[in-house]
Amino acid sequence: MRLVVQVPCLNEEETLPLVLESIPKQIAGIDEIIVLIIDDGSTDRTVDVARAHGVTHFVSHARNRGLGRSFHDGVQRALELGADIVVNTDGDNQYPQERIADLVQPIIAGTADIVIADRQVHLVEHFSRIKVGLQKLGSKIVNLAAGTELPDAASGFRAYSRDSLMLLNTITRFSYCMETIIQAGNKKLKIASIPIVTNPKTRESRLFKSMRQHVFKSAGAIIRAYIMYKPYVIFSFLALLFGGIGLIPFVRWGVLQVVDEHPGGHLQSLLVGAVLLMASFLSVIIGIISDLIRTNRMLIEDTLEHTKKMRFG
Ligand SMILES: Nc1nc2c(ncn2[C@@H]2O[C@H](COP(=O)(O)OP(=O)(O)O)[C@@H](O)[C@H]2O)c(=O)[nH]1
Ligand SMILES: [Mg+2]
Image 1 (cartoon, rainbow, N blue to C red):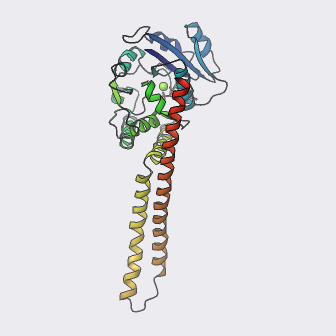
Image 2 (cartoon, helix red, strand yellow):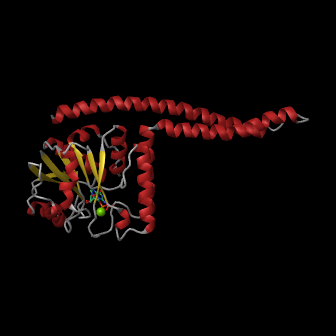
Image 3 (cartoon, rainbow, N blue to C red):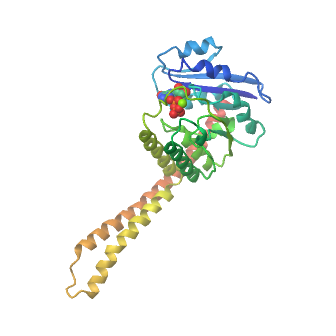
């Protein structure tokens, strides 16, 4: 079995040595461990530091392309290198690389396709109460969309089997974390979770400038993934909402036509009701169209899977 440990890096010269030193040199059940650095347009000595620590495999972006793209490109290279398992960890030494052996264990044993390290956010010292609450809420929504029961959806410390990587196609630039779970859940891959304790914080997150930005971006990613896999949920909700509210002024108008001494009035109710019912009708139509597009996407993904299998053997 060949394991590729990939580390996406944007200017990580300071912490990368800690990461590289803590990646195990040997793991039971694994014949070869390859470290792959994805240099996402670093302007510091990240690449030199990695070379000095014996890294020979690199994916290089001349310009910063973001974490989502870095993950994607890393996975392609890892598959080219013949990886049976790919582990992703961060360059800021946030995650305990010593635990990689435990992370890959369920995949070696064949009991999981993807293993996600649970940071146990309530134990992380520098996480505020609000941040812990938001992380848990985010995980709940992702679980709902994916049909999974994972405690920590935003964790980037994960192991993927080769087969699961053939099936996953991430497209959002910013956050592949939640997207991979929703895709994997909908494709009925088995996702396991193991508890870990994160290392002390080495620096501020560079992915998110503020908590508000984090919440908005995550919400956007979740809604998008939801629409992609379960469009009928969103659009039937909208159709029922508009329809329900629209019926009220409509019925009111109808009743008033019967009981009023001077029928023919109350056109405002009729107008508001008609507009809302039209919105409801449109939601149904858009729901049908997005469901058709979803079927199309499934076919394309099928083809993509075959192409990947042909390309990577
Ligand atoms: N912020 C940021 N990180 C990147 C980018 N490309 C790759 N990375 C790497 O992604 C990992 C996670 O970034 P980090 O700032 O620690 O975000 P956190 O997950 O919120 O702690 C680190 O290893 C970065 O070096 C990028 O464009 N922006
Ligand atoms: Mg970090």
